[in-house]
Image (cartoon, rainbow, N blue to C red; front, side, top):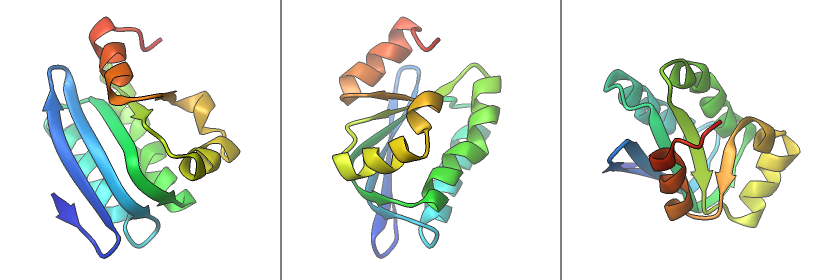
Length: 122
């Protein structure tokens, strides 16, 4: 687990990839933690990523930029990033910036796992 003053990331495995649990406040000063985590996953050829946002209390455009930075490399390898368990204030930022058009956002981790296991990411 990587920890900053107000942000931490936990990483756990599932059959097809990894679940990243985001905790706290993701902004310009903490986004480097998430950036490094995703870079590590790409280096390990783990391209199916579930972002569990149940404990994410805030996200800025800098935080969202990390997902945009890596999504092409992930999708070019047949993977994807699926978001789940998003709190309303975080979803509002995603929605305002058009992210629901670019990414799958589902209700909970079980739904995200089902997408990857069923191959229904189209």
